[in-house]
Length: 246
Ligand code: IPE
Ligand code: IPE
Ligand code: MG
Image (cartoon, rainbow, N blue to C red; front, side, top):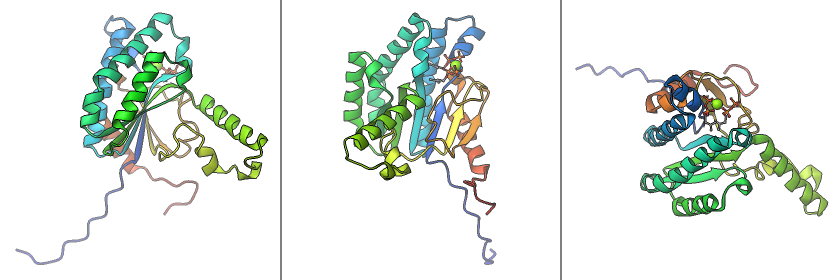
């Protein structure tokens, strides 16, 4: 047996601390099979279950999923109602497994626009899972980044008008505390499925330096292995933050 010292292995690039996903392509998945759009949304909810479990197994500390945007209210009323029904179903049926697996669930978005029973289910789920620490799972519902930034700005303007703070007190840290993601690290990896390459009003402030990974897979087909591939791609990226090569 050789006693020669083994060459030091380079440290593997660290994995992302916060993965955000724009879950897109449910409608096209259904259309390709001659099914109604709701069938795609149902299969999309199955993908959420798989990806949440997979993220936990891959050691992702924070996972944020875009489920319903402030613009999605503009879809036909029956589709909006199907999506809200699936959300109710998800909150009631997945809660136990999320809790058992140590997930802390948080819903990010403007709750004013949501039905009363959904708001109550959200509060119950957040209360039940609030001290879990294995993975943070954030689901964005009635979320729009411009709406979030405007509301943060209004809150700060009110504080200035009330004489509680001065305009110059508003720095990045102060501003971030007004956002719905206060206390979370910024996403370092943003994935969008279905081949579309746009942000669609998602986490505009928070994704300032996120690595973007666009995949052609439609959301209902997305699983742990796709997440793993996106994380591998993230690890190959060189992040510079406006600096020069290290
Ligand atoms: C994503 O799938 C789900 C939501 C936006 C609610 P889509 O419903 O946008 O599916 P496509 O883009 O029409 O295929
Ligand atoms: C973005 O997808 C919103 C969610 C995934 C919830 P959309 O399908 O609504 O976005 P656009 O219309 O293609 O930009
Ligand atoms: Mg879409």
